[in-house]
Length: 196
Image 1 (tube, helix red, strand yellow):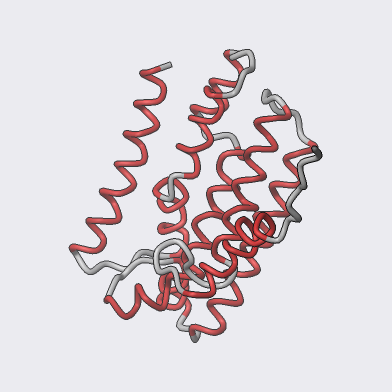
Image 2 (spheres, rainbow, N blue to C red):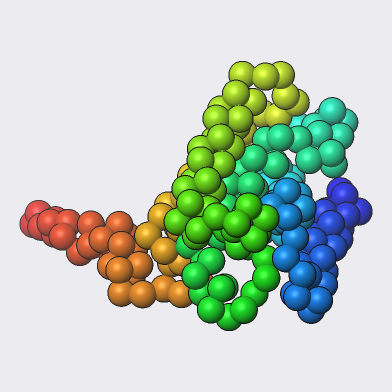
């Protein structure tokens, strides 16, 4: 198991290295080239593989093979993770002069405006969700709890990045959303009076 997890970390570091090379060489990859690397660098597969081993379930050879070969139930949530992240962070990345994000790569490759590229990325996110939902009906070696975890990764990413980059550049609205979800419901709960 340790070797298996180490291999997953190595794959993610290789993806980081590829992105660093693109940045150093001021190279803008094609959209396909970018996405083929970026769904690994976003860490979604690493999160899911770790969660697989942390769940109380029987580990099967078929499931390990599927994890090692990046089954689509690992790939599609990671694609959603990457594209939602890029959707929210691309303006800041453009301002910093970075050369690789899904929106920038799509604009560079097709010559379209940022607005059109954003719409195409939004459609691609929707397609990824559709493919993930379709995979739910296909045969796979994973327990339902793991499949739910994979879907929840996509859901939480959508929630995190739906109003901007609440993770990398939090603002007052991000703080207010967290407060309204977690703190405010507790603060307004009526106090129970102890009976004497």
